[in-house]
Length: 432
Image 1 (tube, rainbow, N blue to C red):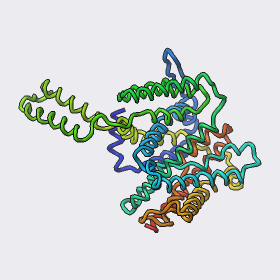
Image 2 (spheres, rainbow, N blue to C red):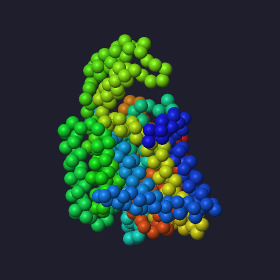
Image 3 (cartoon, rainbow, N blue to C red):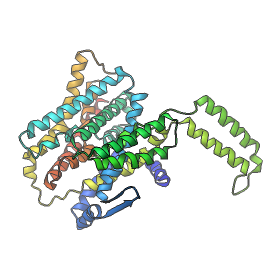
Image 4 (cartoon, rainbow, N blue to C red):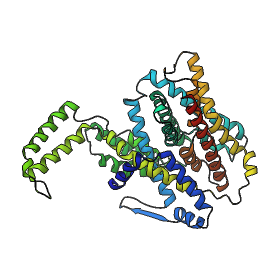
């Protein structure tokens, strides 16, 4: 894991995560429509991975482990960001938080209503109502990064907070509406595991792997068996991760200063290949102090960010966007209510909902735009929020089981997200 994280950290400054997602998506579609298509299908659908412990065992296809396992890590990272924002970030101050909250509410409500309007009388389609509600934060921020220093800090904060609130809505929607038959026994088991994590937090335990291990065995697996989608466990476990620190900066600098002083005093003792015992012990103390001056939540969030955005999400995109074009009637796709509902929801509904709700609350003087932002910025941000991609595709797999409906939905998501991203980019480029 550390080696992968190191490689990802090295390329982070050079490669935009949005471009990585775009590349893996295009690669998946090319492979799925090439002579390698059967190999692609077998890789994700027939390659089984088995994990067997004494208490439980799972043997599922690779596709399953990506969507229900690795995506739980993605939701875990989202949960860490949500907790941080609520406690010390943009969502901790009601006045500042209200603008992106209002925008996110409009950006979820209007797309869902548009989809329902087109598909209300179709029982096969209506379950996809939440698909156009989602926002892909990686793509949205990736496009924003293309504009570089011209982007005001307030705009970045607005879009990031909007996307986080959007993620909260997506998690609640998945937990409430996209669950199968509920097993009370396993649900209670997950609750017990969650309570144990909170007790450990309050007891002052700061060893992150203890939380991860109990989170997997005591929360993720029981939720998987309960009927509630297992990725929700990522959010739940994230909320139990401690955010407080053992040392403040003054105590850290004091203790670290004493250690560095002793290391300097022994600087003539080192050998060519290894440290002397005294030096090694002092450096180990310094490592401990470094761990105690930063919070476990911050350490995990920082450690998982690159791994999630440069490995998990591209892998998810590669596994879920290999759409075969053979047999697709693109003419009927344009007139299909399912595709119309998704496209209008993401491309038009997102920006309309965000703009409408912000305008109404602005007229009521309940929110105000930061001085560095204007209405063109809100419109541009609204289009970027229409990039559903990862979350929309994820909800599609929960909403439908027929291959035809899934293919139509994913194509509509890709087209709408692409057009929304391009439109948002050029609007912001011109207005900035």
